[in-house]
Length: 217
Image 1 (cartoon, one colour):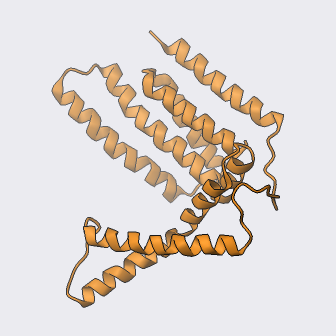
Image 2: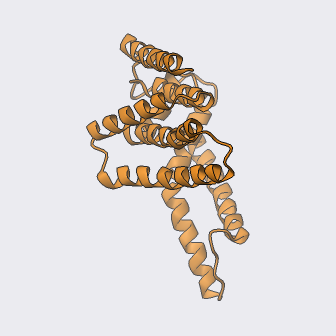
Image 3: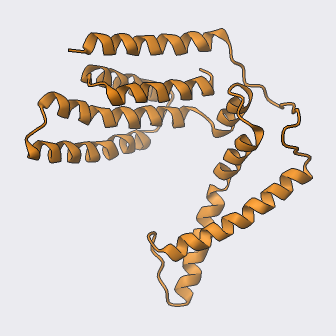
């Protein structure tokens, strides 16, 4: 499916699941997401991580609600499965969609302004550099006898200053390469948006609506 439509579909389903209390649809979405991740050869380690994290938070939330005694078993089951839906669908999207392809699709198909598309791509590609900068700042602080933890404001302040410097360098580099905001641009790779993508989008959304309607009390 086209990355832009895939993103729109996941966001739409997540919003509907947030306001509906049909646990059977949640279980179906979890099963479909898991099957699709297996078909796309997502590693077992990643699947285990995507399972244990929501399992911990869902169990904690259900346990705290059950202690109050005001929540019904149906509501607890809905809450328990809802978090799995969010994590599994998000995991399916991130594990099957390349950031560069998504950025190109948002620019070409969703008409996202080029500056936002390139800004998103630049921020994603700067993540390894940000990690290296954090390690450098921590090492420099330790040489002065200071230990900077992840909650230390000084650490975030220095990283933000470095990021501001990188943003200026990135803007200068884009200008030197001929980037002009608002000017017509050509694309080295075109992301197609065909009728099959729309049929898949509409069909998946329709199936969810039918499931939610049939599962309502």
